[in-house]
Amino acid sequence: MDSVEKKKKPGFFSRLFGRKKGSGKTVVRLEAVGDIPPILDVRKDLADGLVKNAVIEAFNAAKTDYIRQFGINLKKKSSNRQFLIEEFQHAGFEISEEASVNNDLLLEYAKRNIFDGISDHQRPNRLEALKKLTALYLNFYEKVRFADLQAVDTSNLLATLEAVYNHLDVMSLYYSMSGEQGEELE
Image 1 (cartoon, rainbow, N blue to C red):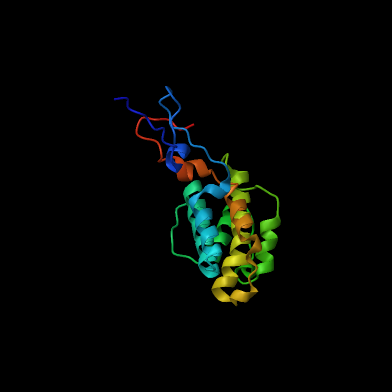
Image 2 (tube, one colour):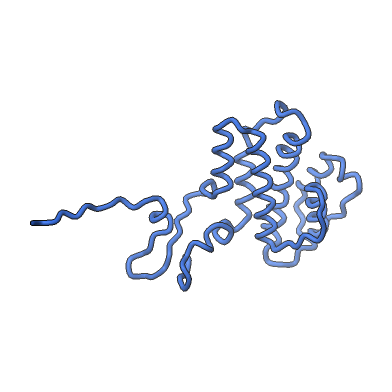
């Protein structure tokens, strides 16, 4: 009796984390930044009509990943706005007291192109990620949390969220734990 072998199509995870034959290394294929879990979750919430949840989840995930990426130690419990202001101060910006209540002033800081104060090799990415995180906060999160939901145009939400992640190392944030012990990621 001859046995017929059926070839199974590789599943999602085996395609994403598949092994190269004979290499012993795990290969992670990332097609786009939009393939990472926070963006997929926000996209799903938007499709389900859960706009407020999508916006809040987008900002919280981006802020958490920003903190993880740059090894920021939060010393005290502060508001999201205060966190952003402190990060701009860390970057070398002299922030006036008015920025804690004036969105236009905070956006003005986010548009500046100086890198003073951040001395490590990550400084351009850190400042650019901070600028995009600030835009996400002011244009979406703050409006959803403290204003009328109808005042929020979510057409650019995913683009703004992806812009934050374009300046973060998504491979180390989401795929560094995917390899088994002793394997290298490419």
